Image (cartoon, rainbow, N blue to C red; front, side):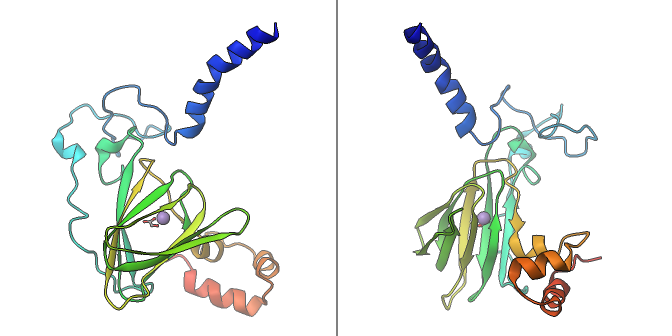
Length: 217
Ligand code: GLV
Ligand code: MN
């Protein structure tokens, strides 16, 4: 009896493991180019009928993006929203450009692990585990760093020249949640008393931070 049970467990274990370790769901067909305009709601996007090579192509990461914004960094995504052919394929990319001093602020990707490859310059990068341990490193051109799925992470260009990195994700739409924007710029807003207590600061400070992250009307 015990042996039978063990054999059954050994047979079904890999199936469970496979479904736990994969990020996006497994493919059920060769391609399913996303119809982003469909009103049908499902997990992913419905498939288009007329497809071409262009559905799998994107030139949007070829050039550096402008970085003249508050943070001095710009993320250019290449997800299923830009490359509809990625629908159901479980992968995507992004390019991040950083001015000197530029910051990609603390954020998480709820649906993907991220791996970055430095194209140019140098970055100080890090992620924080659920036990609040920081893993950080300086990475330069040609080097790679990994941010495990769901963990808070950031990159800052402490160098004197611009930097650029290419990020790959094991999800067609990793999702990005920036910590500061989520807490201080949500709509409707999180109550001040939640934030004063959470951050151990006064209402004035909370209001000041909120004013910087208020969603644009
Ligand atoms: C970098 O962390 C990115 O999400 O593009
Ligand atoms: Mn990221």
